[in-house]
Length: 182
Image 1 (cartoon, one colour):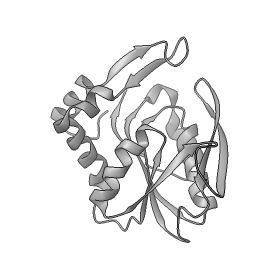
Image 2 (spheres, rainbow, N blue to C red):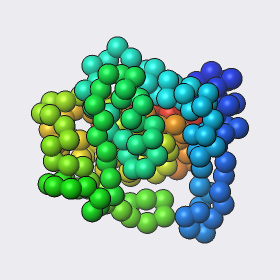
Image 3 (cartoon, rainbow, N blue to C red):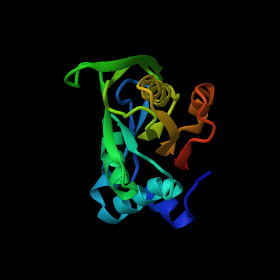
Image 4 (cartoon, rainbow, N blue to C red):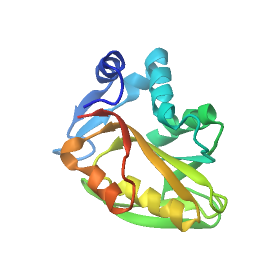
């Protein structure tokens, strides 16, 4: 079920392509590159991701590498918030906080700089896809370990059959926002 109007949902579906067997055999990757290349659809996507949080006191948007950067930075601008990149291990300078987690097809470690969030900062987490929920749950953990508060998690699309919402509910995020659910 979509959390956006049917016209936008149709546009989003038309601009997301499946890439079979990427990054590993058996995985159907949801490629948003065509969406990013279309100004009107990209703009509408960013607006729709920001919409449920307008009027909220968001201090920082945490964008998860790499497509979460592309979506999260403009959401931060719309919301009048700062932006913090959440990166793969070894990609950030200085002191970092890290969290390891399981993926649909392996495991990984994320990091954020230890000073990415002021104490008690209100943080919105943004990513492109909610799959098993491991990446988003690890990011929620990182934000909290830095002393900030997670206000919400928003994604472009959710792979409902992988039940990533359960991983977020397990870490206290009750209602992640997804523009589309596959």
